[in-house]
Length: 140
Length: 403
Picture 1: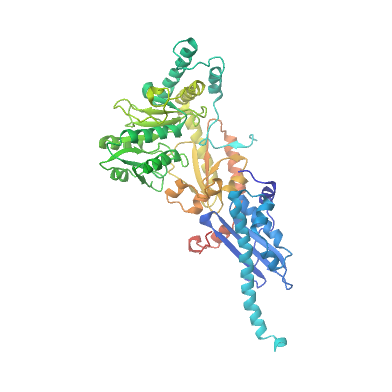
Picture 2 (picture 1 turned 180 degrees about the horizontal axis):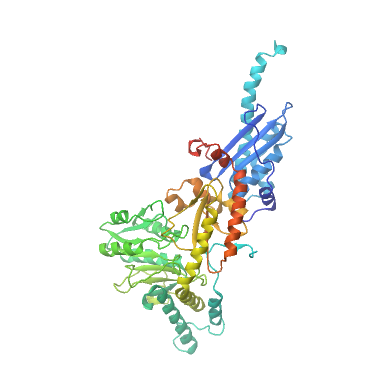
């Protein structure tokens, strides 16, 4: 299989590899895929008080296209609000990386990873903010 | 520094040995006659060359040249043997036996026979890739007409005990076909001694040209086949079509060289393979696939756990190798051969097949080992599974969201 230059670039120089503190309230973690299917993506986002994603990290087990798709989304989600990040569609990822039809599932997985990371953050945040709200003097 | 990329995929195909290519060339130009032309010297010369090649092929496997039928390759030989014998002997029974780790050129004709009303038993190999002979014996029924077991597996290189399987088949009156595409020049074959009725050969796995193969069809006791290609009645009616003289001459020369050189060549290649394994097995979590003893000398198949095979192949793109990873095929299923051994999906996805050959050097192997050490480590740094493994998490205990 031949790869586009963009896939090769992300594969050889992956952006934002690593991990953020999963227990931090400002961090959302999404892990999608399964080893049996040949790809697992872990995407983490760090959201600031303004609701903007200021950092993103990934680790991926998978083919070159899976690694490139996750590397690309760490770049794309940075600076976006959660809703803007959720608006990133797999078709845009596939188009940017010129993925062949058999690799479209890699872009779908990357989109799923964004959704999972945002959902995890929102889960935490709702619980935490509910807690704050209960003892927020301004709300009383 | 070796010339890059380094070819370590000799089980996929081999280059034509330059000595073979040289012998072939005149048959493309001045010696172009049709071997079936009985009326002039052009035909006689071509026919003589074809018959000499038939002797050379027979010489490598110790059979009568009259038992060799030219085909377009091992796939056609497998089809002719399996469908041809099943259709000819269907009056005796409609049951066939094969193994799940066979090449698709055996499994797909079996599937076709099932559509035609035959019944096929697919045996699972043991975890080392070898067939349990008691299980094989137990699978034979009164209506079994043919068993097909490959000599050497294309992915993991294990050598099946075709000598004993042949004895079992002969004792039960079952025809025995062997796909030997991967074994010529790698493992000795003596058809005078083996109780094999049909054997498929390919030229391009043994330093001959692509597009030519042969089927051995035993004469004593005589095996009959229903032709799959009808036409001018070439090859005693078993396979019609003008003989490709230059290809045939090439296959003959390649098999003659294999017969002359295999003993010394295989020792050299075994040393290189053992050096490769010694080099990569020092990495953590590397698993050998297939039995190491009952194995051809040029094959090494290993799984690099927690690294996906296709991304590893991208990383080691200076090595031309193949992978059992789903991502290298259109099917998105990992190697059915490794799965049949009971390897889990992760290990099947993480496998790389290295196959060494005539033109591999020690420098090539040293380079390969060095490259693997560098890139397996790099990809594991990228792998969430490796992190989890290091944190002591059992991946089987994780609830994965399968997609």
